[in-house]
Figure 1 (tube, rainbow, N blue to C red):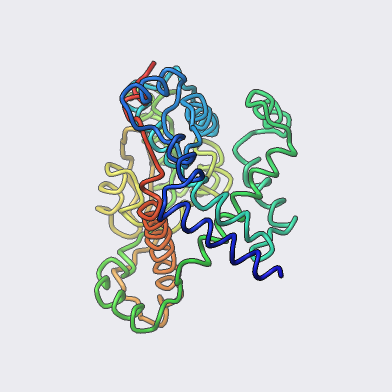
Figure 2: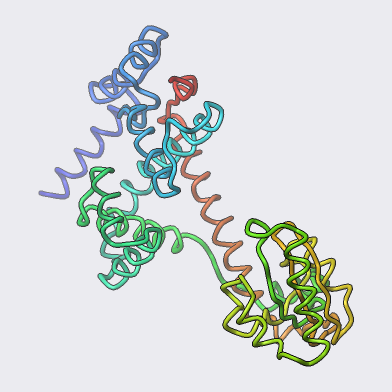
Length: 344
C-alpha cells in the first residue's frame, strides 16, 4: 500500500512539474522574479539575490563583509567603494555557496561527516590567536553579536563543510605526478646559496646616521683588536630583540628571504669578514661565519613536500570545480542583481 501511495505521489509531482504546468509548478514560478517591476520591487526591499525564490539581502551580505573585516582588524566604513563591491561580491558568493552545498548537501549528510569536539576546540584556539587576550576576543564577539557558543557552531559548520568538500575531491597524488612536478621545478626546488650571519643592530628610528656609524665603528675596532667577543658586544649594544640574547646570531639565511638591501650587502662579504652596513631599517655590524653554495635536492628528499603541495593544489582546484558544477546545475535558480552591490 505504501509503495502504491509513494508511486502515485511521485507521478503527480512529475506531471505537475514537467508535463502539465500544474499548481505546484505555478506556485514555484510565481515566486521567481521575472518582470522589471518585480525586480525593482525586490531591490527596493534590499534584495541583492534570490536562490530558489528565497531572498539574500544586502544587509546579510554586508554583515558577512563586516565579519571578514573584523577578523582583519578593519571596518566597513573605512573601505573604499571599489574594494567594497569586490568584498560584497565575495560575500554574496559565499552565501550562495552556503545555500548550494552547505544547507542542501552538508547538513543532509551530518552522520557521514561528523565533527568532533576536539576539532572544534582546535578551531576555536586558532581563532583566538588573532587576539592578544581572551577578554579581547570576547569583546570582539560581543561587538559582532556572537556568543562563544555561536562561535563554536559557526566553526563546526565550516569544518563540516570542508570535510564534505574534501570528500568530493580526489586528493590522491601518484608517484608519476610527483616525479613530473619534480622534474619540471628542479631549479626552484634546489637549496639556494646560504650564509650564516651574526649582527649588532642599531635602529634607524632611534639614532642619527653619524652617531650610529660612530658607535658601530668603535665596536668594530674593539672586535678587530680582540678586546671583546662578538656575543658580548651584541648583548651590550644590539637593538634586535630576536638575536640580541643569542649573541647576535641570525643563523642560516637565503637572499630571497631577506630585504634586498640587506641581502645585497651581506652576500657580497667573504667568510670571516666584518663590516658596518646601512639599510632602510638602520645600521648593522655584520659578520659572515659560513657560506654554502646552491645544492640540488633529490626527489626522495623532496617527495613528501611535493605531495603536500600537489594535494593542496588538487584540493583548491577540485573544490572550485565542484562549486562551479553546482552553480551550473542550479544556475536557473540563482538570480543576482549586481548593481545592488554598489549601493552606499
